[in-house]
Image (cartoon, rainbow, N blue to C red; front, side, top):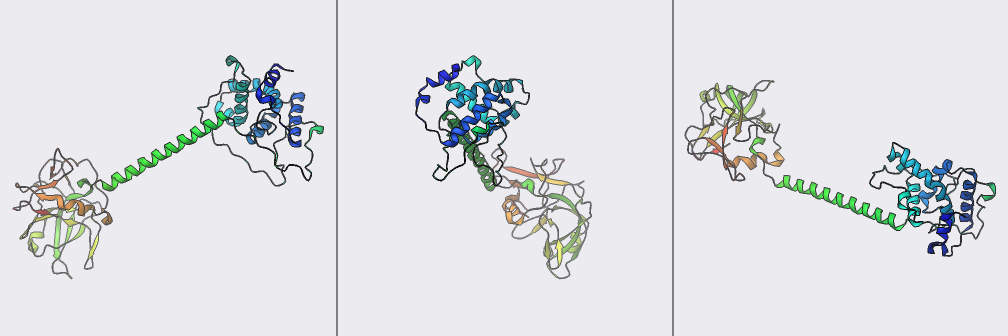
Length: 379
């Protein structure tokens, strides 16, 4: 009788009366046969498979002498696997149930700390894939190789217990699993909260004036709309590679046709195109107005078609390719466009406490003005 068996039999857990079923007795006999044949190393895979479905070798709720005898043979093999293998994660994943069983028994049997198998529980192992059993396969535990014929499990008879007892994980394993599940749940909750906060922030965050694509445009030619008395149809160069754009403007009442020819203006280039009496308009000429008159927003001298126009502080940002009408970006920003007493076009940024007034400008820092209207509506 080995020293470990003697130590185990002195424990209170070994003195509890446990009646084994016929199947459990057969399993015990099979593992005893493996020990006697010296084929323990060749049966490590079967051992891991058996311990996957039961905490202990003969499907009991507590360890038996069979576990201790097998532990004595497996323990040095487990230490060798851990110490001599480079890909330790692969070994842990392959024999995870054997290592769990060894760790439990070395604590139970009070193996000296210096001799214990040291396991790294912080390793993140891949998820275990459990293959489905084929029809006709025995539903019991995996039998070890080269088991003695006399130890084969007898066939069930009517009246035999049809369901063998299952082992429960030890308290240390249960505690670790509960902590892992709790940590995953907390991490998921925190991620969802962060995602929701980001979505709420975007929902309440006002749009920036950099979303609008202002450019200098040059009106090459303008005519009256053939089917709308209040509209001009202009051909305007805004620097696009594909050529000038067609723009419909309701300016007939405010400017004679001659004033619409060959002049520089400021154009909003990323509004959604709209059909105006059969002609698609792909941009908008920016003007300032009050109750009595309308005036062009005038680019500074030396401007060229396609020059980028922006409000101070937003020159490095790219405008949206096209404003989404459903998001009402233009409608949210336009009421803040006006002119100051120097007739310069400005944006009143209520969110900017340090600089609430931003001028419409270009890369040179020049201003864009109307002719005479202060406090104008700019649109």
